[in-house]
Image 1 (cartoon, rainbow, N blue to C red):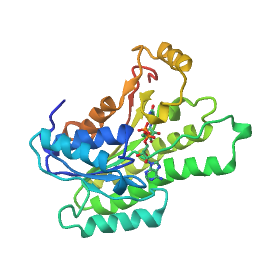
Image 2: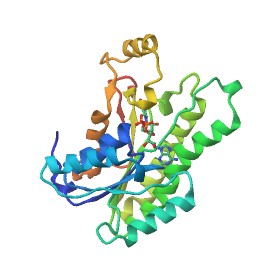
Image 3: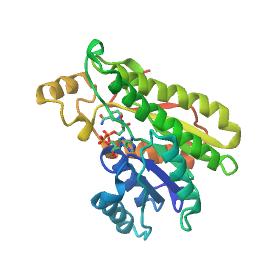
Image 4: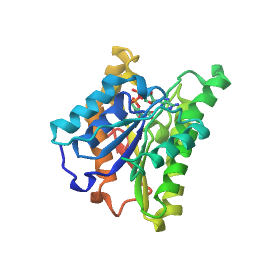
Length: 258
Ligand code: NAD
């Protein structure tokens, strides 16, 4: 694993950190000595994930215990409360790095799509990121910071049966570019990550035949893993990317090339 010494003791907030990509990101930051705040709707009950992050820190000689804060990121009120808790917390008190990763996918052909599914997808995947960015930017305005928003390769080229998901993820890219320009002079960098096909629970329900078809489409010939996304998050959060803002970084085995 790469070492980013400037991440030691930095406070990093990760939404959707109970499993998949978010959990791998939380483990990766803990291994760098960052102070990790883990969020999902029920993270306070997810002792196993919190323990994994604690272990990643201790295996690398750090003693920081992650802070687990449940909240539905699609609710502005819940996110405001969450950030109040962080601000008032003796050991944390602020956020230096925001990783807005929580997301869902509810797939189906457009003409059969229920309005409720559209709304839920947009509310979690796009408005949830808006809610978190707003609180993070308020916190970082004087100190600067780095915000990484989770998009998807699907937000860059669309996909049959994923119109709501694609629209939400394209929205994440546009939101990130706008905020990057708006807050560059406050020392806040905002970038998006656009993963391709990554092995997590979200992609578990894809059958083997379809998986093989995807693998054929991916130039590197394989599905990615969540640790490979986490490494890019470390880079974007660290000073190694100090002159990068407003970018969308693909982590997709060469699938979508710009
Ligand atoms: P996952 O389903 O394994 O994990 C999603 C996480 O988000 C969980 O921790 C879940 O509890 C949390 N979450 C969902 N709704 C929430 C809410 N309202 N408030 C707070 N937390 C909430 O998914 P994953 O595959 O790890 O995906 C993580 C992110 O990466 C998502 O934004 C997803 O769209 C994106 N992504 C995934 C892939 C992939 O192939 N897995 C590809 C591209 C982009």
